[in-house]
Length: 392
Image (cartoon, rainbow, N blue to C red):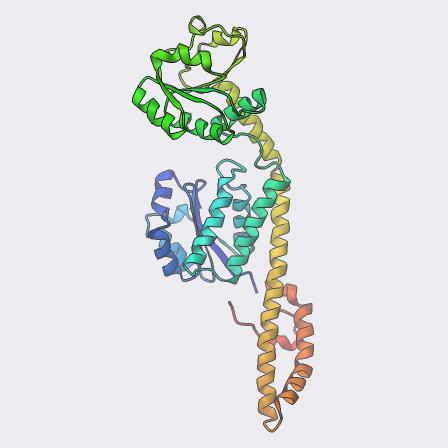
């Protein structure tokens, strides 16, 4: 008997962003409604994928996605071991837009929790997702699949850590108050930086960003004052000309580390030639990202090996589960037959006789357990051919 799992879904590999937006199921309204319609299932819905995992017939899941404006060409269907393998690869970060990204593991865990909350899980799905989560943790702990910065903001943070080691107590100046500045400050605060100095052409935006990180806001006219106080400068302002030039940089005795992640650049390249000034730009950061991505890809074979081991463990559990289910059904059936055959007997007699009769069947089931995944549980001469355990 084949593994009864299925997967119907779409991802960044099969559908453009506008299609993925239509397929996405919000956790408050759309996802509970989908689970109620499916009966049993787990839905993994992120910005890069919407996948429905279930047991049995995938027809309802496919119809659900098609009704949301997804075309058949955007969908993929995987069943049995291939559905399990796909789930494991997703949890391990192998199927992500950025190989090894860590966010997907939390999203897989959340998908399982939401399905539980709405009473939509069952034993095979529970075991599959629990195994996927455990595998994702192993992949990150035992391989380098998640090592190294693979975004500009993380690469900038890695450079800062490489220079200073410990960022606690440092004064950090941020030029600009946009999304990249906010992302970088989020990373910095997690590493305990001291003062945060936000400089922006629009002082109101500077105050808003500074307030979110317990920092200080300055207008662009105060840039020289800020640079004199800073240990680390991150520039990400939208400006048509250089904001930091050698002539305007105050003289200083201690080193100044500058990261220019703006395009066009905010910092004149000549600043990097000044004593005590260390300047890095987007090209430097992108080289770090490319190097780290290449290193992650080199870890893929190790993770694939963990995936295959996890599949083997799941199939072993599945075979045992099916055998236990079959033994229970057999025992109940034989007991009823014995009770009908000896209506004058007592329960003790029935149990003894039922045990004697069922024993060879149980042995045959255990010998043929592995074959439950492929077909008949034992050879043609086995009396179990007359018995088929009910599907889950």
